[in-house]
Amino acid sequence: MRVVTRPDFDGVVCAVLLMDALDIDPPVRWVQPSDMQHRRVDIQPGDVIANLPFHENCSLWFDHHYSNQPAAPVEGVFKIAPSAAGIVYEHYRERLDRDYTELVCQTDRIDSADLTLDEILHPENHPYVLLSMTITNHDPSEERYWNRLVALLRTRSTVRVMDDPEVKRRCRQVVKTNIAYEKALRENTTLVDQVSITDFRKLEPAPNGNRFLVYSLFPDCTVNVKIVFDDDNLASIKVGHSILNRGCEVNVGKMLSAFEGGGHPGAGACRFAREKAPDYLKRIVQILRKNVPV
Image (cartoon, rainbow, N blue to C red; front, top):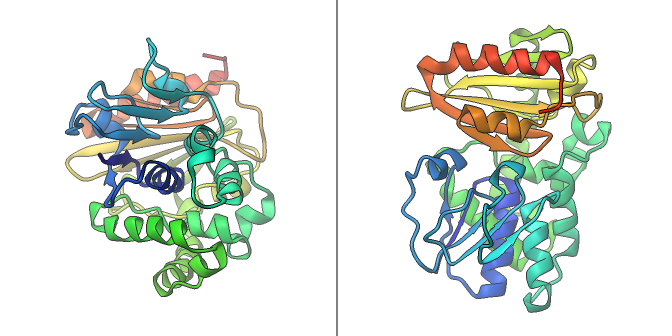
């Protein structure tokens, strides 16, 4: 039996809860949603999938993304919710060895972008937000850290997790990276009507940083579109409603399901061959500028 999830904060907390509740041994199988959608993942009977699209070979599945709604009943739980971790916690709460209430509450807030302006501008003053930002690089070489974080959160208080030398080093790096990321956002973002477009295609590797920062830098935008070039001749587009200027009516997850992706009503992503980038970007921006519910 394996936990299969994605490398973000919600995925990490899903792994913590599932390994505790079901007594699953490490390591976690870390997977990108697009790889699951394109059937590039070997899912085996007994696998427990969380925070990812469904795969018929798994034994249990837990998810909360609008675009992943199952067509028929499945083993596990699907529900539109702030986080997948919250669904897992609710399902297995009585079987857990530790009290994860605060961790799950904070995961709900972070994954649903229910943050204050101070948390956006000064994550260093908010441990859970800062910790979530240490998981930004989805390179498989980072798997050791993701697994380390799962082990720490299973056995330590948040204060002790933040005191871990590797976590402290990465938190310091996040603060430095966010300074550079702000500069990159200012230099590579344009505003078209109410849509801010961040184009990092000419920057390889693309900058990573505070995903909420763009909303404070461009307060007139109601939605942000970010496009980057990935490895293996692929490109990615991420779309998110502003959490400071809530005026976007487009269901992002539903929209991006037509562009090889998916997500939540307020945020989502798609990954595709680079040659499709100009067409996909143009069409996505057109939909967002019209701002008609889809």
